[in-house]
Length: 198
Image (tube, one colour):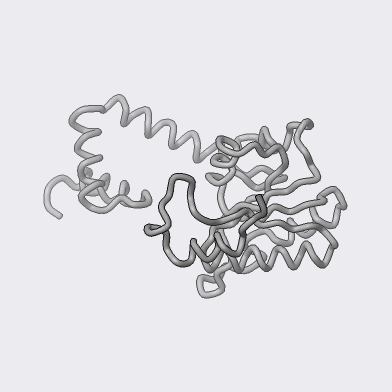
């Protein structure tokens, strides 16, 4: 790249964001510098403050600026139900869309031995202690429907079975409003295997 060293550095820094390639990063950098310097300053300040102050909830491991996130601190939630998700973003989606009033455990990923991600990296030792406490009566496995997500769900289901805790898996299948001819074979297979009586 030619031109300003600082601009090139900004473009490269923006590329750390998911889905942002060289052209998108360049458009963002020039937009901020040409049209929205106040927005850029606010973004930089908010990003710095978030990095300094946000850690993990000591109970569910989601991102939080408090030792216990709002959900874990809420005594009105059902502590006997524990939903297992891969990321803090999954918690937000479920909270916004689903009518779920239980607790969460955030893995911060999924099992991937080739990438060096095993049970310890996902905090499954912490999960085991929580399951051993006797408070959890049902695990809801809401990992992504990928090969790694399914393997992770299976591993955790075994942990639950060893402790005589009910484990359920969220349904996967044909989306409402979807047409069968456009649904891939794996999704359609999940939909058939997870069918329910009406």
